[in-house]
Image 1 (cartoon, rainbow, N blue to C red):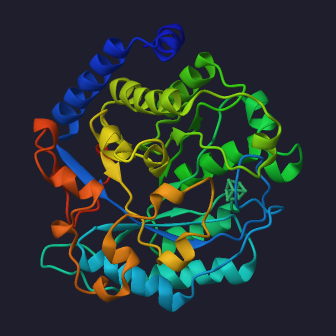
Image 2 (image 1 turned 45 degrees about the vertical axis):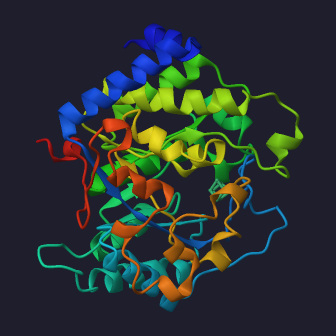
Length: 367
Ligand code: SF4
């Protein structure tokens, strides 16, 4: 599991090796942290962003329809997550540092914490934020208001590659991103990170370094996923080659498996980006060692505008997220949609959904 060995495993395209690796990672996951899979109801609060990342379909300079959920919409959606016993929500959005937005998040965090748990023995909703780089003071304000996990992806730990996929200016600084991650950790968040997999210019050694960074940073949770191109971004339009969809899916699953073997007791998300490449991508992520799934519960009329990459195939999560009639009554346990089949005896793996639980990383609780 050193850099050379990881890079060799990443470069190896032997299907039998890749399958054996995924099976071993799943075995280690169950042995270390149990069969549970935890849910995070994903609320995409806004696609307005001050940044201009070269791979992103909602970057500042792209022409798309912008939205911001109202307080009432966020609260109604969070209540759906509570009623469906998800245990936690993730509030994700483009990066904004304007005072009105910061105040809005603080206000919402406090209000979400006040939602009465849906069943006896359940805690108020756990809250993860994923709102980009902010000042240390803002991170502290949001932590004090009730957020306890924060996902800030490094996207690539190779500074050269980082600067190939971001504009070369102070708003997109690799060092600033690293500093923000260490700020989050020092404040007391469970600070998660992650990177894209299968980017143009990316080598197996780059991906091995990403895995080693997660370990060195001591990240209690990681959300990484395959690169999926958006047709109108500068990175796609540059024509720089990248691996096929089949290869990016295999790489995405392999990175989950390798990370599970490298740091067995952390939380690893089966990213939505896997689902773009395979209708059962997130289930395959779970069977490769991931233990967190984030069903998208953003109101559908807004979800279609959060177009980081081509997400046409994604608009079919829970029916209750797309059918307002079902939102109040539908309970996730009865859902027939893909991620819910995890509750069945998927491939004989005895997966258990951790309903109503925060599902914090065991790694973080270590003294
Ligand atoms: S990747 Fe995030 S920060 Fe970058 S442009 Fe897209 S939404 Fe904004």
